[in-house]
Amino acid sequence: MVSLIIPYVLTWIGIIIGSVHDFTAMAVFLTVIGVIWTAIACTVKHFSKRGLLIAEAVHAVIWIVCKFFPMVGAKLLGGAVGLAVSAVILILVYVYFFAPSDEEHPQERQQEGRKQLPNRIYDDSNTPWECTWRSSTSQETDYVNKKTGETIRIYHYSISGKAAQTDKGTFRWN
Image (cartoon, rainbow, N blue to C red):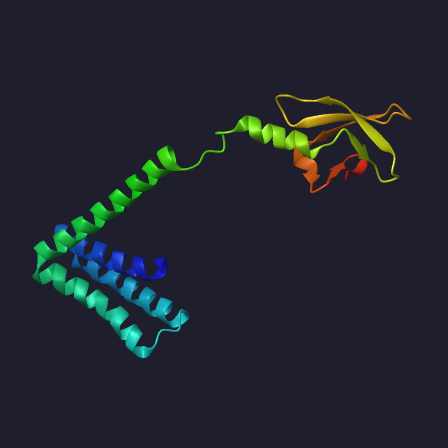
């Protein structure tokens, strides 16, 4: 969709530059770029010949409306700019006031993370490791191998399903 809107915007900008600065060559140059861009976009999107002609004719309509009926062109441009500004404002209002936030329930998310790791996990050789510490602020848990006294810290971002990948191997639980 963007590939068919930008060529028309180029034509419109060219006409504005041509009218305001009396620089018709720039208006024609930008329109030619828009026409070529439209032809390429229509060809890539497999438009029929009729669709291609209609898409190209829009450039001529823009020229006719803006040159012979400048007030209509100005109202259309003002309406398009107003619509774009309104859309941006509505999106910002939605994002800042109505969109769900990730920070609404941080305690629930921490509890879900703690629930993922049980009190006992097993390494590759099926040796049990017991939980010795759970962080209350960040998402990490320490385990100890009761046979060897070796400890490991598992960070919740290293968990995938019911297993965790660490520098000491893969640990799993039921």
